[in-house]
Image 1 (tube, rainbow, N blue to C red):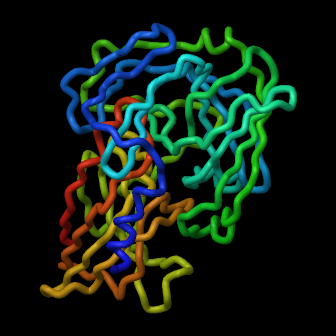
Image 2: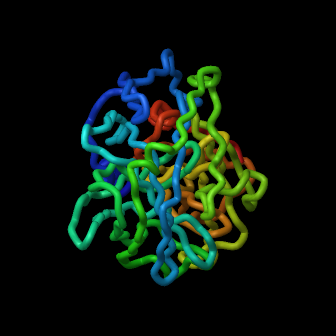
Length: 352
């Protein structure tokens, strides 16, 4: 089996979820205990039916790792396995939707590690334990989260186990985040606090193309550079309502051999430029009818280039034809407004 075929076959295994169907469109509001529905949704990013208020409950850190812990009212979301999505509804005993954003203390780069698990303690006793889903929401961007069960008002401790980053680290991230670590956040919880969180319906916008603005919180949010801020852009494309920017920086990463060039592709959401991690992406670079590169693009992260996919190639020349193929869409759970996009993703062709 070729390396590209192997990665296409195994990429969906990185995020476990139950297979479902895109036809499931209901979300549940903890404030109304009713289902809200956006009818006639397109396979694009759209304004959700409502905005959930978010409360920052605590921060923690260890070494270069920094974490911000937040929660909102419980709500449904969609998991994905391969190209199948499944609606994760709100359980009867759920208390809040817990969210964590993890970043580098030195560069304030949000870290798209794949594996984060949480153990929540009260008075030294475990009250909730689970693996958190890598998630994408319009107002929070990339984070980890799930609906959790808390045991009444009081002081809690969240112990987070953070797995080693799977993406190659570049620039000031080189040599960091290659090992598992544990982060601890202490926070206060009350039913009144959750009950008083805002909940805003969007009757005039829901279902329309567009996205909520990123929230303003005392922590960084994951965004990739604007197209004009990437070095030596060689092509752009769109697929599944995601935007793609191909570039070949003059300054090659440390893992690229001397004499080689670096071909990179930045995949991002429209409107907010959030990165789309955990894709299986490959590229074919053709010159004068012959392929000069035909293989996978590996995930990488740098403070200046953001999260992207790249590979070492001999060189990139004007007139080359670049075909970018999505073997598996982003294996990241989605909040309402993203669940129909970034799934059916045809290949893209660009001329350098």
